[in-house]
Length: 95
Image (cartoon, rainbow, N blue to C red):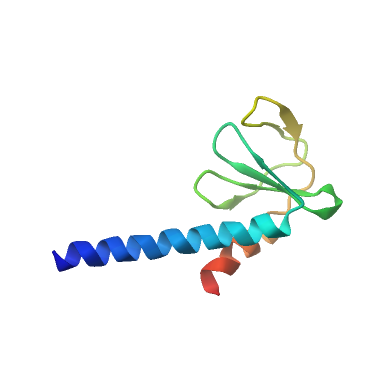
């Protein structure tokens, strides 16, 4: 029983850290767009974009890639700020 309680506590702590890291990224972005596949596009000052996959990991995306938003619109990827987003997502995990 104690093992189950410890596992639940550990998983809860990881979930809280993941939410905190995403909040850091959302605060730094000028706009956040949810995509159809569960990914998230962050638009920073200057219009540069970064993509977070549905697992919460910053992923490289070629500029010019056409993405479909959750509401069915299409947007074109501008820039690739994967390093910037990766740093923001990891910031909450290490603070």
